[in-house]
Length: 133
Image (cartoon, rainbow, N blue to C red):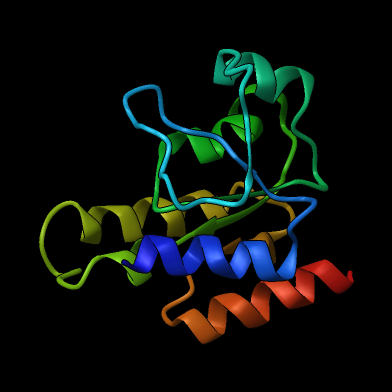
C-alpha cells in the first residue's frame, strides 16, 4: 500500500528521528520498523509541551497537524500526504481540504513550511532536503 511506501521512505531517510503516532482508533501496522509512540499522551498537551518550529508533522491530513500553530503559535513543518494516498481528489472532502490548507498557509510566517507532495519521489526529495537542513 502507499501508506507502507511512506513508512519505508521514512525508515530509509530518517530512521532515528521518525516517530509513528497512531490515531486513537488506529491499530499498529505489523510491518513497521519505525519507533512508535507508546505513551500516547493527549495530542493537545504534546503540542503545548513538545512540538516546536523544528518538528515535522506528517499525515494524510488532519486538523491535528495544525494544532501547534493554533494552540501555541509554533510553526512546525507540515507534510500532508493525502494526494499520495487517495486517487479521486475531486470528491469531498479533498477540495475543501485544499482550501483549508491554502487558507492556513496565510497564517504561517514561514509559508514554505506546509507541503502536499503529489508523488513519492517528491516526498522523498522533500524529506531528504529537510534532513539536510
